[in-house]
Structures are given as C-alpha cells and as structure tokens.
Length: 245
Ligand SMILES: C[S@@+](CC[C@H](N)C(=O)[O-])C[C@H]1O[C@@H](n2cnc3c(N)ncnc32)[C@H](O)[C@@H]1O
Image 1: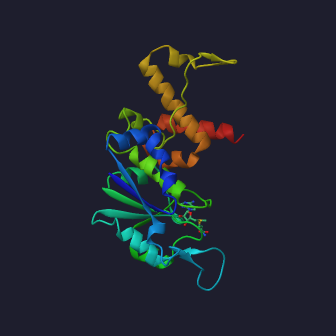
Image 2 (image 1 turned 180 degrees about the horizontal axis):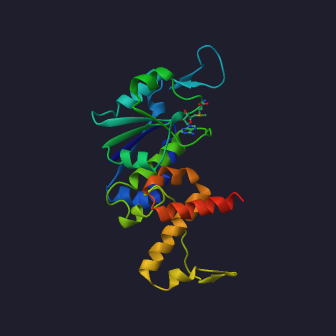
Image 3 (image 1 turned 45 degrees about the horizontal axis):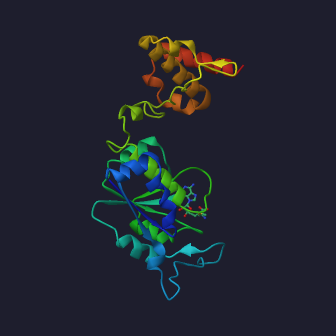
C-alpha cells in the first residue's frame, strides 16, 4: 500500500521513517510513503499557493489550480484522494481498516483556511476529520491516518494477533494491561492474571473489557448490545445502575 501526502511541510512526515512500527514497515517495503511539496506547484516567482478569500473574511485559501497541479503529479487510476478536514467524517478504526485495502491514498493537508471548495468538490473522494477541534494543518491528521491504516496492512504488526485484541476490534475497549512489579505502591496486579489459568483469565479479561467500556464509552457498548450474551447485558446494566447512584 502506498501513501502520498500533499503538503506545504513535507519534513513533518520524516519522523515516521525513523521511529517504531511504521518505520519498520517502510523499511520492509510493506508500505510506501512519499510526499509532494505543494509549494513546488505555486504560481509566479514566489510560488504562491494561496490567496485572499473571495467575498472577504479571515485567513488565506489554498488555490484550486495549484492543488490540482500537485495532485495530478501523483494521481493514478487506483488513487483515493482524501481531504483532511474538520468537515469530514470522523476517523475511526473501521475507516482505517477499509482504507488499508486500497492501493494508493493521497492525503491532502490543508493549511490556513483550507483548500478552495471547488477543488474539494471536483477531486476529493473522501473528507476525513480526526475530531471536533481545529488544528493548524492537515499534517497531524494525515500522520494519524497513515499510522492507524498501516496497522491493518498485513505484516505491519509483527504479531498479527495483537491487532485482533486492540480496542475497537470487537467494538469494545481493550482490557487494562499490567506488568512487573507485581506490587506497585499498594496496588497489586489482579491475582487471577498471575495464576496461569487461561479459561479464568479469558473470562476475567472479557469482564474487564465490558466494565471499562461501559464506564468510559457507553456508546460503544450500545453499538454491540445485540452481540452480548444475556449474562453480559445484565453485568453491564449493573455497572450502569451502580454508576448512576
Ligand atoms: C486551520 S484549519 C482550517 C479550518 C477551517 N477554517 C474551518 O474552520 O473548518 C487548516 C487545515 O487543517 C486541517 N485540519 C484542522 N483541523 C482538522 C481536523 N479536526 N481534522 C482533520 N483535519 C483538520 C485541514 O486540512 C484544514 O484545511
């Protein structure tokens, strides 16, 4: 799978090449990453990429013709053009999984007031937001999208199983994790995790998963409600009753 970012700040993607899971995947050629410097496609002697907003208003707008020239330099028949935008669909794990099945994602990184709407309407396949807040540019959202999507590309996570147990995979948050020391301050690791009984451990982890999700993300529990056993539904209802007392 290949990612291309179109950005005024190509160097913001360099850390991906040097750290962690994604850098290893790049080195093993499981994913490719290239950047297009939007500035190179600017107009005039100053390579201008933006201009004042039509009708007045704050900030500068990135020009559609400049954006298209940059996009066109990397566009292929199988490219999916993604606009990072607070107006987009909020990014989540299922979108990441879906995108990981595509061959080539082109991530447009806005700056200032964003791209001219005509470019978005004409050339963008998917608008993605990473949440209801405003960042100064689309580079951080693009980094999030590249990282989360790459984790679903076969082979990127050394141990394939680790993705299966991650939060959101079965619609719930992952159960909490512990490691040595067995006693930290006055807090022990839950005894059941130290006893080596796999059946009991699996049951315990499932109940912790339900508990933590019921407390922190009741919306997720409701999304998988019909998939829970009657016993699990009762367990969750008890937690909610207790919480609302
Ligand atoms: C300062 S923002 C522009 C915000 C725009 N004026 C608005 O209010 O909707 C500049 C760029 O950052 C990116 N951006 C900012 N917040 C984002 C978010 N929550 N999700 C995805 N991209 C975002 C987009 O590429 C956007 O074009």
